[in-house]
Amino acid sequence: MITDANIREYLLGRLDSEPELVDNIDEQILTDPSFSLTVDVAEDEIIEEYLEGSLSSEDARAVERHFLRPSERQRKLEVARLLGRYFESESRKAKAKQQTAILGVFNNSRLARLLNGGHEAQTAIRFMIDSNRRLENGVRNWAARPAGLVSDGAFARAAIGESRARPSSARRARGCVW
Image (cartoon, rainbow, N blue to C red; front, side, top):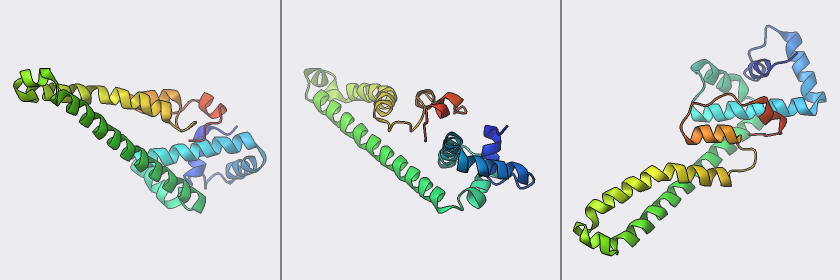
């Protein structure tokens, strides 16, 4: 029986001492589409963890020395890196637009004039914006995320800052590839 841990160790090049297991995994990848999908999900998880910096130093070295040898995985890493940068950039743009719009409306309001030209109120508004931004961005990003990018549970844990748990087998069964 091949476990998720076996697949991960296989992808990180740590099964050299078990050639029979390596041959079995190789054969399963070629003959069983659902197993091949499971391996693809494990690859995507490793790439995600590598980009997040959440791998142990030993795992990060294994990624750099073995996992990223195939050009296909190098392309996957580059695409994931570019997507991360794009979403981060879009998030910053949306944040700046929202803050500018709210402060612009507030600065012209009667309440702003009453509160010392709006300085104290602006500070309070900025605090409220910052407090609510994480929640709003989390909901917005969750709704706009590409299908299968992350499971709903993992996304929710990330949005509220919980540590990343291992994805469930249900996620793999749904065919998520990221």
